Amino acid sequence: MHSGKMRVRLATLATGDSTPNMQSTSVRVLSGDIGATKTRLAVVDISGAHLSIECEAIYSSRDYAGFDILLGEFLYGVERTDHAAFGIAGPVQGREARTTNLPWHIDADALQERFSFARCTLLNDLEATACGLPALGAEDLLTLQSGAPDACGNAAVIAAGTGLGEAGLYWDGEGHRPFATEGGHSSFSPSNEMDVALLRHLQQRYSHVSWERVVSGMGLVTLYEFLSLYRQATVPQWLAEQMESDDAAAAISQAALSGRDDICREALDWFVRLYGAEAGNLALKVMSRGGLYLGGGVAPKILPLLQEGGFLDAFLDKGRMRPLLEAMPVQVILNDRAALYGAALRAAAIEKPAL
Image (cartoon, rainbow, N blue to C red; front, side):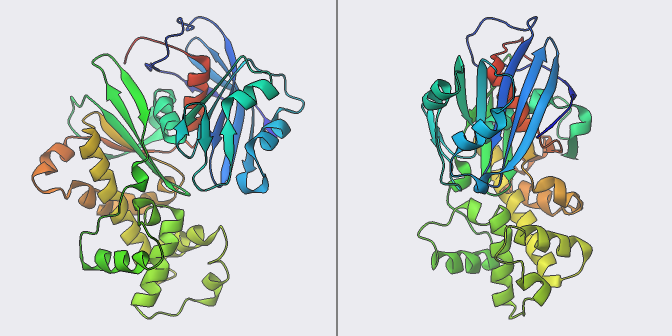
């Protein structure tokens, strides 16, 4: 575990919590961003308009049989906090959650009792990212589309990483109220002959083909494998050695961005187009006039391709709805602590005036 101070600007967020205003009170909380690949935990101090990370650690999630074991390791030797909140890559039902791409069952009541928290809160990881948006500064965002200068209304977050997460932010006239969805598991919809061929290929493997199957780290690997078969191309030895590892998607994207392999580049271009298409679907369903944000670990790593235009072309390709989508700001979240910040704000139960 490494420790250190990090100062972060906080704006305003309507958390939906009815707890009294704690804006002038210093609050020390435990915050977590639980993903299928990695889990990030931190003790965070929130005072007035400032958020400071007291100590932080990142773990390989698959190295632990359960979250409670990992949490116990992090808390060993750390001064305990009264309040904790964890963003989890999976649906949260009541006070329990099961991670989608990891065999963990997380029970807030059990954690609260075992670690003597006064309060323990679970929320979906994309809901946590949405809650963390006000903690981001201009340097934490990259604009793909400016949208209308007076853009206001609902917003949405989509994040390709190990899986595909989606969340909305409802605009109530005074502030945004984040809510979770499992939109990444909705049915994949092909838009051209190549997409149809991909769908048919995947239907032989899965009873249900979701957007997560094609727009995620594992989705990029799937696209490459399909294209290798479709183009009758031989997988180079240097890549074949990594195809069964957790580094396969990174290897494909790096080869694509460097120009090392044509099939890798075609797969990544396809991935970007599909990402844009589903982002447009989400934007229409949520009516995100206030903006669409790309979170997750993939987008910051492929910024050159996102900026080339394929993403926005697919995002805007919605027929008569194109003008509506053109008015929506589209930004990439560059700060990988957004979900951690959001969980911290939820744990502190800060309720402030609306943006």
